[in-house]
Amino acid sequence: MENVEKKIREEAKKLLADKKVDVVIGYERGTLPLTATPCFITDENDADKLVYDATCVQNLAKYVHDIISAHREAQKKVKPEDKKKKVVGIVARGCTSRSLVIQLQERQYGRDDIVIIGVPCEGYIDSKKIAAVTAGEEILDGTIAGGQVAVKTAGGEKKLALNDVLADNCLTCRFNNPVISDIMTGDPAPAKDADKEYEKVEAFEKLSTEERWNYFVKEMGKCIRCYACRNACPSCYCKICFVEQSMPQFVGLSADQTDTQVFQLLRTFHMVGRCVDCGSCISVCPMGVDLRNFLKKLDKDALELFENRAGAKMEDVPPLSTYRENDKEDFIYNP
Amino acid sequence: MAEVTATDGWEPKIVAIVCNWCTYAGADLAGISRIQYPPNVRIVRLPCTGRINPFYVMKALHEGADGVLVSGCHPGECHYLTGNYSARRKFAMLKRYLSYIGLEPDRTIFTWCSASEGERFAKVIKGVTEKVKALGPAKKLVKTL
Image 1 (cartoon, one colour):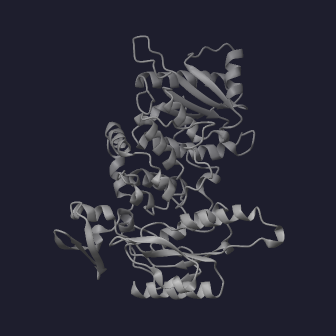
Image 2 (image 1 turned 90 degrees about the horizontal axis):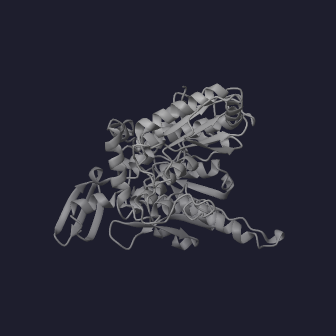
Image 3 (image 1 turned 180 degrees about the vertical axis):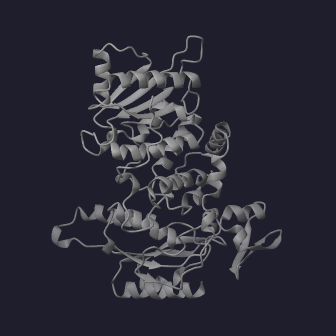
């Protein structure tokens, strides 16, 4: 990982110096131990701030869309002869690159608007798993080395195996190397346990209707509708989200539990063929709602019905914007 | 709709979202042919099943419909050529997803019914009404506040 970090800095510096990109989106050290935060490098001398390790959590594709659409909006007020192009460089691991593919497939920007610095990924740390081990005590210091995480709290120091604190989606990740990249840093990362990808969903499917419903109600009961999941999701980029829409108003804003349930239902259903299982929504959720259980189901169905994995290939067509004449029809009612 | 609760005389309320060109005409034919079918269904006409946002189905359930029926032209017979093919994909996903979260699968029903199938339309409505009646009033996802 050390080498990858060095390579990212070098490449970012080169891209900025050669004026090939206007900004590089990457991660820098966070203010708290064992955290990294997204950063935007516009000056080549700042490129040394960039880091890359298991503390880099957020999917950066979100910011690519934000920056490019804000730039386009600003360019509307510029005279045609003064119009400028903005090229964004991005540090992208597997899931980030898949999100970029989705945004490209959905024609949000052109391939020449972005420069992808691909990084191999071995998974990121789930802070909730660490909090469970330290029983919520404040982390004073933390280091990651050699497959181990050392966490220092007021109560003493603990050593944890990195694999035990990796996020669930990382443990069964199928795409831990970028699917598209312009510059690749480092050798491809070793494969993860991708065969167990749908294990939890399959177990959940076997439960009775009532058990499933009760779980759904329990999980959605935690949701406080802060919309952090939506704001962190690289596939949630509508200018006006259905949540804020009032004509028609799809979902109410009352304290009624079903409003929250319907909100989550609608948001997750928007992710058909678009969720890359990057875990950003889960990592930002302050209440720890188990969104993955539901998002993964959509992923599984899209694979079963339409042989589609979201953002896996540039040539793919989003599953709901195409069809086959012989698509499965077993759900159709015939009296 | 939501305030109707289970009593002895409970009758389900079913929202049928249908396409203008086939099922709506089919319903018309059923009427013209004087075929009897249960009056539990409220028909919403849209240009095409491809026009139906899956949100409409969830919204109907949220607002207290006991069942939702979506019906359009048979595959290959769409007035707009491919609208119902895309609809089929959306609803295949939706039906599975709603069942997965623990909604009764029979609350959301999808079918095809052409303009000449007045009899089939009546049969579908009969069948759907029976299915929903067997389930009882909707409680899940129904807004009460």
